[in-house]
Length: 392
Image (cartoon, rainbow, N blue to C red):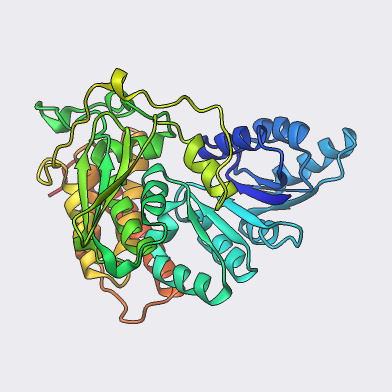
């Protein structure tokens, strides 16, 4: 029996993880965490009976304890950032499913690896901000970092048994989001348009990232970190059918791809059951019905967030953390109607250009860069709004 803790259980990945677990016999849920969605957490507690839960703040934790006692649940409640570190440290957990959006999960994931727990990671921001340090720590502690993103799971499956030196190129596929064929004025794109993804049903933040293709830029950095290849060996291809989840070209000319219908439950299940493959109820791929597979090169001028991601990857140091943090702030501002769609890339670019990196590479310097970038981006946005002027 594999025992798991799901961080971010009320989100899209967290919810689908629990859906997968409900159909597997050899996995049990010992811990769940949410930030604010207590109603969803209560339903999950009723179904999975976890021994531990964590919520975002003390007041919610206090109310939840009362509800648990009233309903005769013997569940320990943690809260806040410290609570996340506590729940990943519980002795009767074998694996942590990291499905928290953004850099919020960084400390808890490092804590899990230090406690020698395997991590199924859907939180790309942690790998972007401090991935090299995380991978080194996992090697020292003999811990598996198993990708949950469909693309990185595909790459992981394609690379099984291969040496890093044998990889010529990684072909990272992207759906293209709603705008890869868009020929109108990008500055006029509305929030409603940006939140309509052609393939995947996801949270608002990651859906906007898919529309700007920043999500794919972050995934390119994540690919470089996870598989130990330079960013120059990661090539992005727009693939509207979202059937080829990624490919690996090896130095002998062979290209190996992983194909399936777009369903996040497949990579989630593979991470949970690795190295085994177990039967699922995911719909089989019908290539005859599919008829065609298309691939296009992305336009880096049309999607400047992609270029920013590659530039920050090449610069190294804390620049990927700056990229990620400023993007989170910019996307939040766009979601709240404060800036235009095209301002997202401008906020990130201005923040990256203003940053002075530390030559020391560590989790602390990455966290400091993250905090600085958030504050700078917030000040930049507020300043532009108050002056009634645009971004340059």
